[in-house]
Image (cartoon, rainbow, N blue to C red; front, side, top):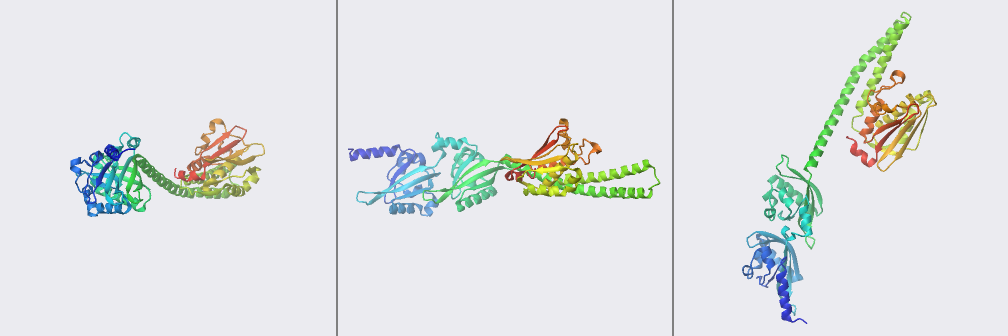
Length: 490
């Protein structure tokens, strides 16, 4: 069995080897009576400078004024131990942030004979070479910790760069000492909000830099608690999002410009449409009056010319209406949940005279609900169905509307057995004012262009699969409800 002297010698050797900890004894009167190498490592005191000093000497002036040394000793006396996380003063009057515990020492009879202080400094250098140091210094993010008064307790190199400082200069300094007053005030308000709420928060914060507009950082800030759960500061991880923020700012600017251009285009279209309709109506009215007045007095060629004039005027009016609808399709989407089955039922009722006249049969599957602008979605289906009716072949015409769903999107199809589209025209038919059959088939050449514009504004795509004389299937997709809203301003 080891002797008492041997145990004492082992105890002394163990204390001296604890270089990562400052360990020393304090008498009941508050005087320091021992020293280990960790004291010099963290506080800068040699043994001769340290032994005999008052315990109060390692506390900051603020803590001394608040009576912290006496409170810590009283708590250790009453409970056996007093843990703390605080600033302490070094021999050169710099500060070091430590995690420590003051233990009450009693003799065999239970009588208090003194105190033992065990402290570990919180400094980046003390983790050098460790995995933690690699993680902290290997990241592009700024990672730092501050105490409740706003003094930096820990900072990695990226933080020092962010604050245009060095790690050694930053530790112990306050925000106000390293930042312009306005930015320091904003950071202080954010930090106090996090510490008071006691909950983590995600914040966008501005830091000074050589760039004109500064650096924008996305900071995750969490309250820092001691072993008793008291908030003693906060820990922050800040990611530089300056480029991303600038991108989003530019994107928002462009979106506002597009919306403004769409509004101006819509207003212009209405003015132009109104100004063009008036003379067209006059052409129609006076041509009709002329035809009535000259009835029986003109030859067949003259009557044919007047018919051409009236047909051209009516076609121009239809074209103006189509161009107006195309311009209006660029306005802001009114997205909502849409029952596509109800849309198709309403469309078939609306087109029933044309359906009966053309002898077309139309069937549909059960269709899914989508997130869309109901008015514009109706225009898409109406244009595709009317297009299929107009381009029917010699066989009894049949149109079928179907849909397939995937996790990402819903795909709709409008199929017919009409005259079809040649391969070389499958893309060009979606361009405005493109018509492949001249006056043989009614229409303005805007319908499919309008479909493409509406579908793409919803975040989808449209295409055709067709062969001449074998019919066509027009496909278009709409993103699922959770994705559609993000594309409405595209």
